[in-house]
Image (spheres, protein in one colour):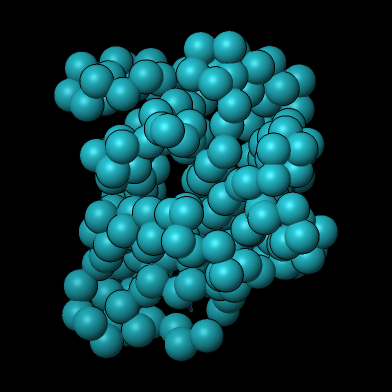
Length: 240
Ligand code: CAA
């Protein structure tokens, strides 16, 4: 039986690598994207993985999107909540819009997607949820009060859902990536990025595959005794 997996933000960056590794491992993958249709089209052509468009910041949009995936591919048993944005600014310059948009996209999406899928996973007695946090949710980051708050919120959210779901054979874990070679990190000012890389003991940015391999491990049937845990994949930048 091929299990069905949804990967949000699944056509670019860490999500793209995750969609690809799950697809290569035999899962039926629905890669969800928000706005970048050109990237999604290129992804589809390159990988032959099916793409779906919806806004993870909006509950109704998630419910409708999940229903569409389930009609096409069958019940969703694996969810990777990877979609996220940055809108960096020091707090004394941050607008309410920057705050709300990042919180709603990065943390609100956890509620929206898990709420749309958890009922079915509980009924069927199987589920694997992996929520993507960040090293900056664990340690804080200059200029990221919004992002770090959302990414830290994911930790409490995931542990709570893990407690509620364990007896239904639904596991919920967190992967906390460090700085990786993605468009998001490429937008960090060059001097700042150089200083950040200097603080990574492994001495390089992560690759998207470094993160995707951890996600693939956690969603496997054999990972059923792992739940409520946070896995740091950050080259030693922050040991937590
Ligand atoms: N620590 C301490 N001081 C810092 C600092 C830091 N990390 N970064 C900047 N400063 C200082 C500057 O030196 C400057 O000091 P002076 O006024 O004395 O010169 C002051 O803060 C203001 O700096 P800027 O001129 O750069 O301020 P700005 O308002 O233009 O921009 C910023 C601030 C938006 C935070 C910008 O520095 C920035 O984008 N930093 C990168 C933040 C970051 O790491 N984001 C991660 C994105 S990737 C990601 O999030 C993925 C993931 O999960 C890891």
